[in-house]
Image (cartoon, rainbow, N blue to C red; front, side):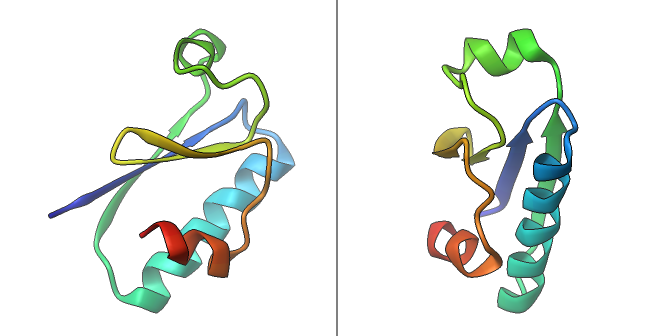
Length: 77
């Protein structure tokens, strides 16, 4: 199964930090994954996210309003 990870956020510093932590977790676990950064505020709101950054794994929102550490991201993979 392939992983699709989406970082939802407008491009702020926290969003970029979450993306970096996601990449660290993927590399550590030696997974292959598609990483998308969704910055469109309408798309973000449509998914029910009111606080960013958020992380979606295979379309399911697993975290909102928090910069997960790489170790926390690993738990969702």
